[in-house]
Length: 311
Image (cartoon, rainbow, N blue to C red):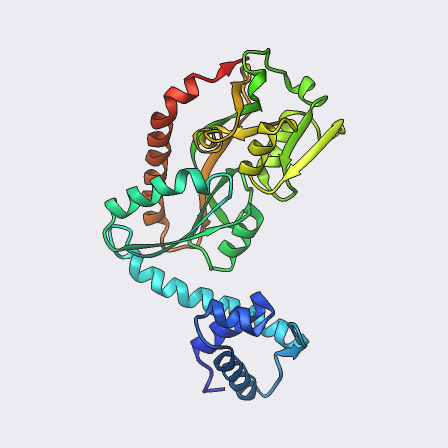
């Protein structure tokens, strides 16, 4: 037992996540044989097997499942020791592991990263783009420091800081420009294009259209906002997108953009992090940079936004 190392535990945790020696080795930037040796040495130190080896994947033994729970706690504590050292600094420094949902990342991240690197010399930013539920999971496991998401997430273990509100706009084929903008009830009768299951933006759009209890006449799904807008440009239907995405997603598609009547559909964007994180003070500073970045993006795109047709 005295031979167990933190490195072995990190390799073990990677193998649990990927269920495949090759992918776990890639994630840890080592060779597959080296990964296999480290896991085998760990099992020998423990005197028990952690994994059942299959031809294409590996799965935890019953002992491995119990061991994995303890390993997550150990690695989280080790990471928090490093965070304590960073927390002693007045300004954010070192590694920042930041998660972002896909309906924000392509539009806001370039401005955020530029502003953070100018504001905090020595800050090393690692970005993870994925769905909200996955970001929450990785925050809880200590694999992320913070995440930018749509609020609320309503997780008791997480701090939520609201940063800004953002309206949704209607994207229609170009020939519809100038036509009356449909209300939520009329949208339910149209061919509505939405993101696939798992995206919080999909749920927000469905909520605006009151489609949780009413089945739309025809509902089509896409994997990204870019796909949805291109489908609209091809005349397949209409969609809703967040205002920050307008400048990027509509520049190469023959579509028109319109605002809804007040109260407009909207979402609140904010940052979340573990309440137990020693980096709370630094993350609050970073959240202010994110807020300013959103203001800068909004000012940059205001002329285009004003040109959108109101309902």
